[in-house]
Amino acid sequence: MRDSSFFQGIERAHIHWGEHVIPVPVFYYDSMKLDAAFPASYDGLKALLPSARRMHPIQVSPGQGVVIISTMEFRDNDLGPYNEVSINIPFTLDEATPPSAGILAEVPNFWVHRLPVSTEIARATGAEFGGYPKFLASIEFERQDNWVVCHLAEGDQHILTLAGRHYDELQEAPRARANYFTTRGGRILRSEAIARKRLQAISADPSDVQLDLGDHPVSEELKGLGLDGLLVYQYTPSYQGILGPVVESLEA
Image 1: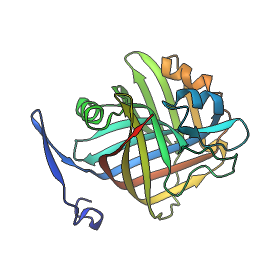
Image 2 (image 1 turned 45 degrees about the horizontal axis):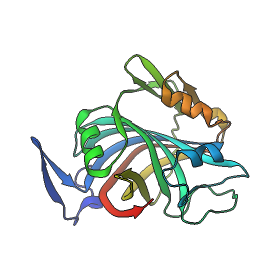
Image 3 (image 1 turned 90 degrees about the vertical axis):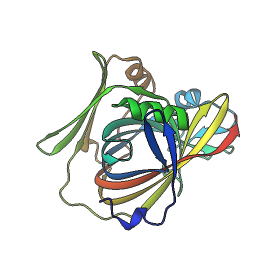
Image 4 (image 1 turned 180 degrees about the vertical axis):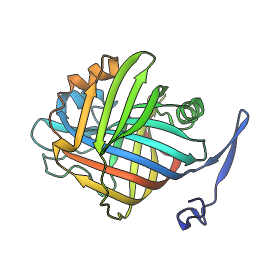
């Protein structure tokens, strides 16, 4: 995996951070991911964005935006193995779009709203270098028959369990780019990521995803968005990625 041509020819800086040396951009050599996109209250999502003036949730129907819950098992990367759950809101910058059946632009923008991770180095480096809203949590994956299940908790509080159907029939997918937005010091920050999704399956069947929300404040926040149904589910059992540093700072 580490000798993949995907990473060749990229020059990296090496930043001394405590006892560690962090390469930038960060390479993710072997990962697994479940993505589930749910319709959610447009007004509720709008209230979560840091700039009501500039950031507008993608609309899939009148009054409905999208929230995406992604669970990642980073099995091999420059920071050491760790797990992550990302709660993202896809949006457009500066100009709202009319309701549309499409969910994502060619290079989508995601507001990273919550980002629990399972190791301290992943939390601290992400918060310091990129302003990511990371917090330490218990994130465990298990395989149950034809399901991949992710359990997320903070201490003894259950946040969520996301289960996605496992597929044996997979298709190769092209590289994908995305912009991830965070905030720091009253500024909106943009970072870029690219993924080489080697194998994946996509479904719009609600029976392929199960979401159970707990009693944590993050759980209550998601319940308040009125998640109902499923827009799309993506199962990616093996992919590689590159996460770059902050490349742009914008006024809110």
